[in-house]
Length: 73
Image (tube, rainbow, N blue to C red; front, side, top):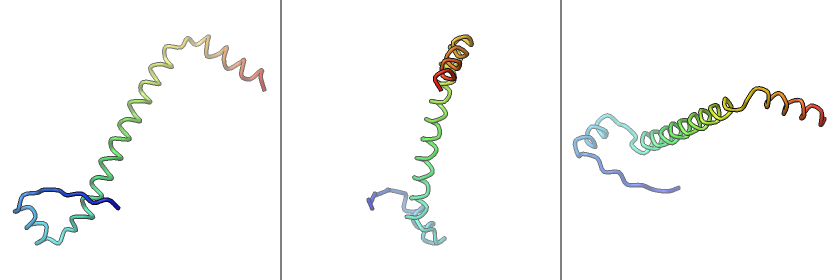
């Protein structure tokens, strides 16, 4: 497992210790959530681009490709 260093204000560290916050656990979870959020955002952007590209294909072309695929079965 990798290790990272994070610098925070002394007062915040004191508050974290006083409240019993498990810094490693909270940091790990926050980083996992941020990575997931970015991945989801990229997936939504890719889906939107694909949707726009598909809208540019004429209906007739989609119908033709569908029929050709059916005929190949």
